[in-house]
Image 1 (spheres, rainbow, N blue to C red):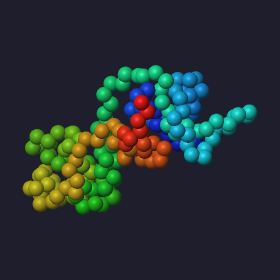
Image 2: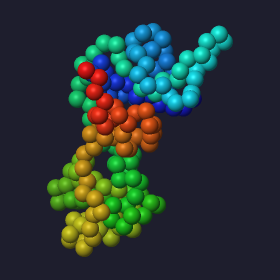
Image 3: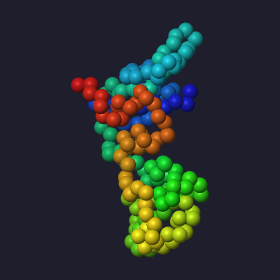
Image 4: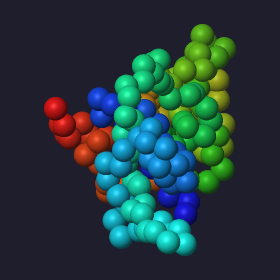
Length: 170
C-alpha cells in the first residue's frame, strides 16, 4: 500500500499528498471526505471493506501559507527529467549554474540546470553562449501544483481533474 493520496482544501485547491493510511484515518475521523476512490482498490478490516482513497477533501478550510517547491538538487533533477539540459545524457549528472557564480550567478530555479559531467566541464566557468553550447529548455521555477502534477513521480488518473483546475464543485 505505497500509493499516495491527493489532499484538497475545502475550496478544492490541492494542498498536499499523504499516504493511504493517513488519508483513511483522516476520513475515518471525519476530518476529510472521500472525493475519489482508487479504482478497484479496497481496504479491508476483519468485518468491513472500505474504498481506498485517491483524493480527499478537508471538511474545514485551512489557510495555507504560500506553498512553493523547495529548491533542492533532487527537485532540479526532477524538473529537468533527469537528463542533461545541454546534450540529453542521463548519466553522471550534476547541477550547473547557467550564469556561473563567479560572474554573479545565483543558486536559483532560473539559473540552475541538470548537466552531465562532460558538458559541465566543457562549459566551465562560462555562460552557455561563451562556451558555444545551447540549453534545450530555459530553466524555470515550477509551481507547487505543476510539481505535483508533472514532477512528483506519482501519476494517478484520479488526480488529473484536480491538478488541471478543470473540476468545478460550486
